[in-house]
Amino acid sequence: MGLLCAAVPRTVQSCRHFWGWLNAVFNKVDYERIKAVGPDRAAAEWLLRCGARVRFQGFDRWHMDYNGLPTGPLGRYKIQAIDATESCIMYRGFDHLEGLKCVEEIKLNKCIYIEDVCLERLSSIENLQQSVYMMEVVSCGNVSDRGVIALHKLRNLEYLFLSDLPAIKDKQTTVDRLKTALPQLDVVTDLD
Image (cartoon, rainbow, N blue to C red; front, side):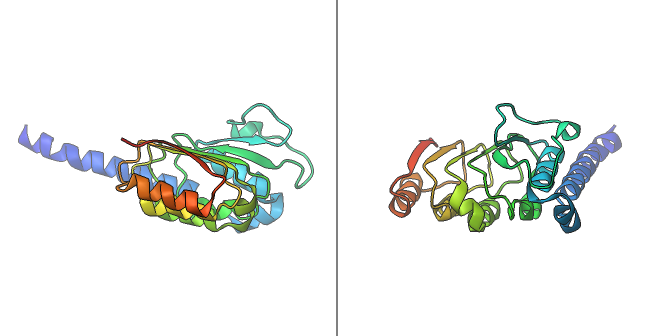
């Protein structure tokens, strides 16, 4: 019996390693694909492959089915909103966001692979600095004060909802720094 119990943790660990590896594969950036189909289509494919949803300009509904993505001329469909709730997106795939020019909303809820470097990378993308005006970061355990403060580079950010982020240690200072950098920003928090 002891031998069986000793084997269980290794099995669980192997399973976790396998899923981590598979998620890393899903996040791999294919630059040739981006050139072939355009940044919005390639980013939508990446996001849906990882379990996220996207909404395109001119559409009310969210797209969740990889095979149901709209087709048409290159550049016709522009991503307006990203809902990455419970998805496996990770830093490795964030180069997919580089060519997006119309993203206004981003929701990062219960994303286990989102960490400070992801928010720093997202905030460093010039197109997103100009377009994103609404964002949520909820239940992302690896996001700390450093990652949230990096969002100050999103110059047009008007609304930010932060909740259940246990790595944030100095909530008030973090919010104050954001508000100083972005006076128009409405920060709503539930971090207690």
